[in-house]
Length: 200
Image 1 (cartoon, rainbow, N blue to C red):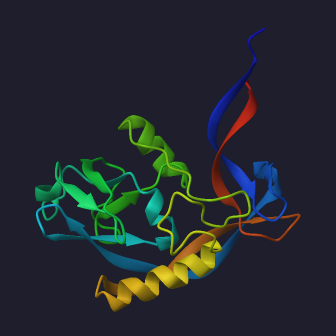
Image 2 (tube, one colour):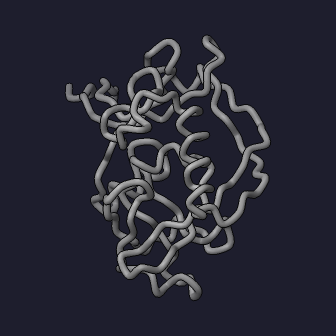
């Protein structure tokens, strides 16, 4: 009847159980986190500050978004930026998803690791790069010095090196909602994988 289909999409992934879990198996937990303001060098030798709660996913970035009406950052739209610790060049795009009043006004787009970024990535035909293994350790698509690290080990090392290189402008406290798997108690990852879906 054409009601069932296979597609590669973002799903809730439990890195302890190494399986997909439904929305009903995910509990939302309020937590105090941090927002890091990271300097991404542009190909014009300038710096664009990007605010993120997840620096460990930067190697999966495929763009940076700025609201088209953002007067302060509009000049960067159409330029390109370089992901720290790599030579990878990504586009700086215009998209209303980037709230000018939130963070730095520039948002890194990581389509394979964030549900909102997935939509922006599809809309702008950006690259989808999955940088995690099934156990939430960084895979071989990241620079060698970070490959094999657990997501939180990678976060610490990335932040230490960014700070050493003077690439962290500032850090702020940030209220967050963290998805927790109700069976394993692990933090759930948005994970790009091929699954069966039923059309409702």
